[in-house]
Image (cartoon, rainbow, N blue to C red; front, side, top):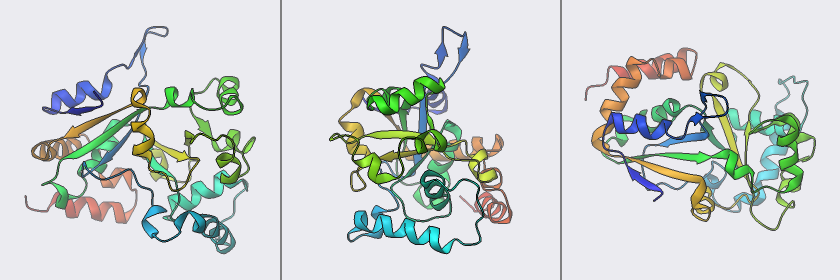
Length: 260
């Protein structure tokens, strides 16, 4: 059963940390990536999809022009994967989706918008290590050589020059997760992880439904959202921390002082 309706706060804590004990090292190491969404029935759609029209064809033009006009950016890493991470981070529509290693960051994005509190929310939980076992040998070998479970922009760049290389790697639709570079405190504080599919116009939830062993959906009832939000605030999981700067501070204060 991939959909689990959460009963209460303690049930949520149990669900997000299950399967975390690693017997070999006698430590807790979660095998999951998390994504919180305020409305349960929303699809896992990318910002690229939201521009409408022939968005898949527009992808290359968006990225090319971002790089051309971002002349004030000076970077030692001129790889495609660095540029697409930078573009995504600054709001350019891309096929990339945001995830986090932290379940509490996912809970924040589940509850940050008070206007959605009448809707059930969801936390998507995926086993990225198991997902990577489905990749072609070319990519799996990179992780084995690095002794890692997720990709970096550097090791992706060593075998894939751009999305075209990724898209043509297999007739099957591929999914991988990579850590973006630490562009600023926001990336670091959100414990960020990116996902990318080898087909720009394919929904990630559809891919997951075809691979039921690698994910689960934690359905968060609307009536539980206020408790989660208040306890996150007490734990300092807020806009002030996750979006460092005056904008994040203002968002936090506006939400904190909004009447229920």
